Structure formats: structure tokens, C-alpha cells
Image (cartoon, rainbow, N blue to C red):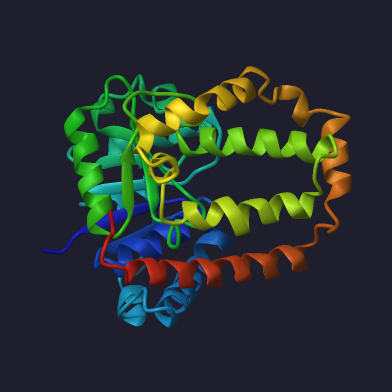
Amino acid sequence: MERHVAIVGVGLIGRAWAAIFARAGWNVRLTETHEPTLAAAPSLIRDELHALARHGLAADPDGAAARVSIAASVADAVRGVEFVQENGPENVDQKIRIFAELDRLAPPDALLVSSTSAIIASRFTEMLPGRARCLVGHPVNPPHLVPLVELCGAPWTAPESVARARKIYREIGQVPVTVNREINGFVLNRLQGALLAEAFRLVGEGYISAEDLDHTVKDGLGLRWSFLGPFETIELNAPGGIPDYCARYTGFYKELASASAGPEVYQSPNVDRVIAAWPEQPSPERIAALTQRRNERLAALAAHKAAQPDKS
């Protein structure tokens, strides 16, 4: 049976979602308000699929690309679909408008899912007749190389909607996790924010250089975190597992938590010191080169993890 998905908004995130669904055998319809972005999307998606294929992450890139098409309108994009992935601006008013249109036009049993990274679903779905089928499916950039998706419904989202979304994301090769109730930032951004605040403090107050801070993560913590979570990590860091770790080390962590980095680390003068500590100047060429390097390394890591027997 053919399966159909509508991708609403085809910037970086939307194009990645299109590649993911097409690679998994779905027919993908694209819609976007900015005509040049929409026109460029199919060839960029094809390029991304071929990049995945070079690492063994897409079996038939041309076949997948052929399943991607541009819809003449939002109504055409959502006609007969079972899933809609919205990737519009991070703006509450725009999301209210977009979801009202999607709820009016999409089949009544289609899931309406937002890629938002910062806006909880209750802020833009409360007044919708079909609000029970609406939720957040927050990906990690770039979604076609980092498979995590955070699922978070509003208080009125039906549990079966979350369950269906989780099943679909698993089927297309992503790793869904469920955030049980709404919280600003969801989970991934809150974890990232805790680390980033401490990084800004340590560099801004001169404890370590910005470059060495990054080495501490990418050549230290990050190596473990690429296949172990924090609880799995501490389970292995004490002979008696997590209870033993808590007994041995939480005194130290209580001390750190009592003086955790505050919002001032993102304000002057600290943020100015952090910016001055970074030795590189931003430019379009540098960002493009680093993005390409990041994607190639993530693809190689994804291929390595996919080859491992334990995918839990």
C-alpha cells in the first residue's frame, strides 16, 4: 500500500524530512510559500539522498528522489496523506495560522506534526477542531543524519496520536522519544542548554580556552555519548552501578548544582569574552565548509552505528 506524507516548509529541516520519508518508501509532497525555495528543493533532496547512499544509508537514491514531488497548493499537498510534517517559522502566530489551514484541509485521520524546537503544541493547537491529532515532532539538525525525534503532545493530544507518530517515525528509521508532558525546550534543548551555560561560564571566566572546551566535549564526553546515555555512563563509572555512583559522587554534584551557571553567562560582559575567545570569524564560506564536514562525519558515524548489532 502506498503511503503519502506532506512536508510543509522545505528549508533545511523540511528537505531532510523529505529525504527521510522518501528513503523509507513514502510518496512525498512538498509545499512552501517561498517559490524559489520550493523550486530548488527536489534537486537538493536528490543530492542529499545521493550523499546518504555514499555511506550506505540510502539503497536507491534515484528511486527515492522520484517519489518526491511539488504540490500546487497546500490543499494538494495534504490530499489523501496520513502524515503532515510542518517546518514553518518559529513564530506562534504563524503556526496558529498554518495549523488552522492544515486542520481544515488534511484528512481527518492524518497526523499533524510540527518540527518546532521551542514552541509547545498547546500554544498553536488549542482552538482547532482536530487538536487531538496535533503534536510536536522535534528533530535534531540535521534530521537525516541524527535520528532522534522528541514527541510532545498538548494536554488534549490523544495518546493514540502520539503512539501512531512514534510507530511511523520508527518505521522510517528515526529514534522517537516521548516527552510525557509539555515543558519549554522539550528535553534535548534543556540538556544542551545546561552544558552550554557551563561552557559559556568556563570560557568567559577564563578557566579554559574556547578551543579546548570544544575538545573536552568532542574528544571526551562526546565519544561516550555517541553510544551511551548519561545514566548508562554512570552505571559503568562505579562498581555497584547507579546506586553506587549516587552514593559516591552526588555530594560533589550537589555542590556544583548549588552554584550552577545563571542567565548572566549569556549577557555582557561574559558573552563578549566568549565571542572574543573564539579564534575564527564567521563567513558564508566557513559555515558551508564546516556544515559539509559535519554532515560527512555524521554520515560515517550513522553508518557505523547502523552496522552494530545492538541498536537499543
